[in-house]
Image 1 (tube, one colour):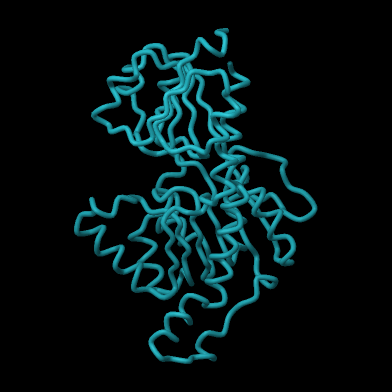
Image 2: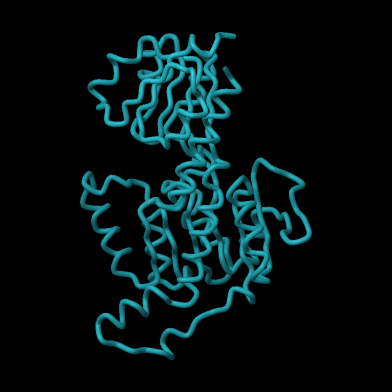
Length: 312
């Protein structure tokens, strides 16, 4: 294993200063504003590459860094990194899902409560001069069944926080087993669909989760339900979501992510769908801020720096 000083660390996204403190003594090039055009010129000697979401780190980019040993993601999702190809080349892939789990869980609850009690809807109505009380009668979370799909760091943290509301908690995870406890019951996906009043998504994006919530999925849920997506935009089929919001099968949706988050690149279909979501008072959209707080910004850097330090 190389000494700390033998490694060349390249950071191409903004990171909290604690990252540098935890890796004191290491050679770190910090280029948070580097462009894609400039990047090939600095990759030749890099042994550890740290990024957030600036780059789709595919085979081409990995091959441009022949000395690369570690890829560090300042976040939880690894879908912008070709992890399989990196592993083929003996490159270790690290992320920091522990760093923003609390932030994502808190925002999930905030959006859910806003949907159930029509907070955003009624606020918008008041700004238009409409004081509608009966029309904004809400639901109490205590009386509902919340189904959590994905029981990793965020799903587990969310369940822990929701327990104080007294709602019935069930969870499904394709990759984890025997995680149930005294306040959350482990179930198969079919049972979760059968019983949930609220379905909230906290899964990684991969082949099995891509387009997971589509018309077939929605048809498998027998009663109208609320849907929240705080994982990745491509997990939900937006066309099917809009259709079922119109039809009433989906009572409301909270989306922190969209399939395409570069709004300036939208085609006509994407523009139309976004407009329909924006016009729907049963939808709350946030710009992928679920894990973005001042505290989580620091924690993500701290967690990843500790993992890189341990590797070195």
